[in-house]
Length: 400
Image 1 (cartoon, rainbow, N blue to C red):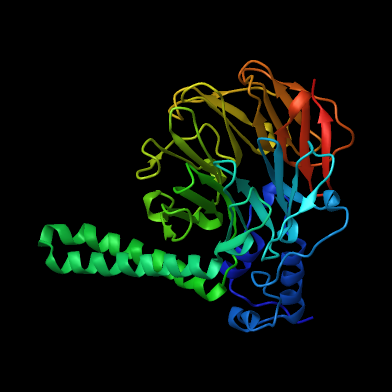
Image 2: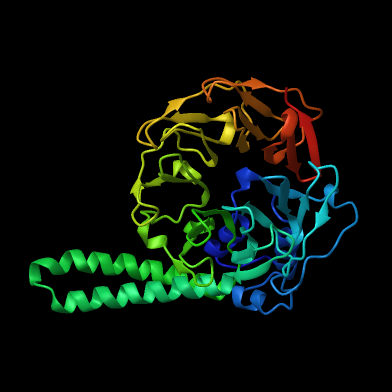
């Protein structure tokens, strides 16, 4: 077999385009990577010429027994549950999960997150830099943004930043020029990354989406992807330069706490907070240098639980300024959470782990489950039932 000689940066990017720690990688991606390895491509450009299916232009296939499909996230909106997952599949249930219908979706990429800020309007995000929108409670969806457009946004922003700094340098006093020269070097590095992404195509995924209302929203993802809209998704712009994320760590999750603060969490202990609806962001010194996969606000102002790799759970009561460790008695990755109207908190994860707290996250007990299935998402239903999604199916669990 011919050895692969693609650049190291390219190979690393392909292998780690999504946190391996999270699991749930798309089979299609690894099939693509396998093709590259067997062909022994000498350059990435050659690989990009392969006539691979463009899943951003292929509608999601309809499946029988949709409840047995792989799902990554779900949300309960009043009496409806909406779940998103593999191959662009979105399903919804109006009878507490007893039966499911499949939505009309114009793409077939892996979907990673869904958020309905109000009952009728929702957004879903996923691979290929895709952002989908529904205005009929998830019955049908339209594509608002894709990775090609995201790459162009980032490339244009990077070019503008370099140009602006060069103009400042030309007008600056001599004592100011050294600092500006360093800033230009940093900006040119960002531009180089943006050009690389544009050449690679729509490869980087969005991992989470959050809307503050039906107009203002954000999407975050791999390699520091961060975009925002103020008109319900009709137009989008890059917001990545607002974060001090020079190493382009993956941004895995975010949430708005009661009181208004928004916290972003990601790999390598990455944490940011905004107290003004996302206009400005402060870098937080995290309590743990491993990856975070979820944030669960409580019903109290400025209070939330932060959780992730190897069973780590932390609690803040001051919107991220300080954290304390919550011992939960497990060492597996925790991936998703939900809170009931009474304040009971569920955190689920890999190896069949489902944890329940009835004291605002101060302590947890482990619920009994069958097997060691990895749970990707959880919602609390009526009558104490839980709805859990995994790579295998949608299922119910009685928590009380």
